[in-house]
Image (cartoon, rainbow, N blue to C red; front, side, top):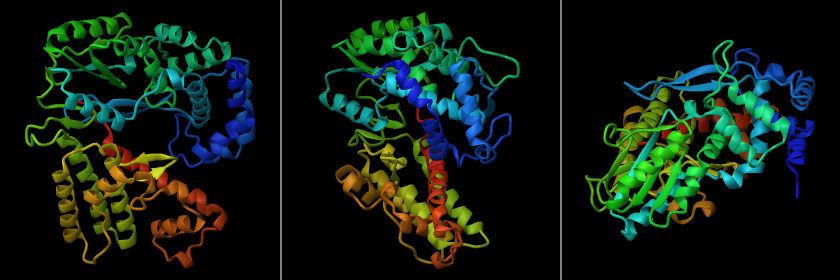
Length: 447
């Protein structure tokens, strides 16, 4: 069995750091506060990796102040702060995340939202509980106490070099000359696994309670129980969170954040809407905001096509179809429909198809092959990995990649001037760009 030290040494080897940069960072466009791009960094890659290794192993590595990026959460809500590291720090953090995943993944496993939804539907169908509790932790990431977090990490990792690197990463902030003793910076590769570890004891305690159904996704906690026990359960969770410096929104005073009610009434969780009042025949649909976000992105693609001076129907078709069906990338299902694949509201798919038809009639004069939400949902539910209806980019060969690159560049494939040796890198850059835009369709899906 590998030791903590051997795992760390292997992950921070020159070969692995080089591999991480080439496979995950070489096409990154964003820069940290030093404004050094991935391209500039790559020109001195050997020296940079050796510097990382030297400083990490002699425990003198210092993270550069993170660049602050504010992401709007909608009108009347404070923006979410995301921290952007320098390329060097990002490479170090990617490796550190690999190490944490290897040592802690089995203790911090976060279920897929689709699987959570499937479990919730099963609980609702069984009817064993008459009440549902949804609790939201206030400003979760900024309020994680470092001493409490390190104490939890030490239960599984005592290697000083690793602990020093973790402490340095979370104590660095986006404010010049200011460090932190509280908070896990959002947006770092290690943020989610550390946050999950912080709540592990609360998860274990409630998962062992056979009288309730408990699940958590990041800072959103959901409990099914019987009404007579609901206040006791809420008090217990609120108290346990307070012991580690976290505040939970009280359903009585902040019903917009936390909720307690009848399990047969309408409630929302992870972007899904359960027991919708508008259609009692449906168990699970989507929140209006989730639907609107998808329609906005589809409309944006059509508008971009319409305003383009060099319109490409082939590119429009490819971008619209991938938004409808989603795709498979790195053995993971990506896209709005994959995320909401547990929907029972088939009428919604007809509505979405109708909207796409309207947008096509409004912005496009020529006919083109459009995929269908209704068909895509059926393929996802009943065929998934064996279906050819949505693209599986993991199986694309160079010729398929070349076709996509040519489509994206709006040129005939025979006139594509990009060398074959560079086609693969160009292709993955295109796919990652599209996936990044697709991810916005399912962002901010909490209640």
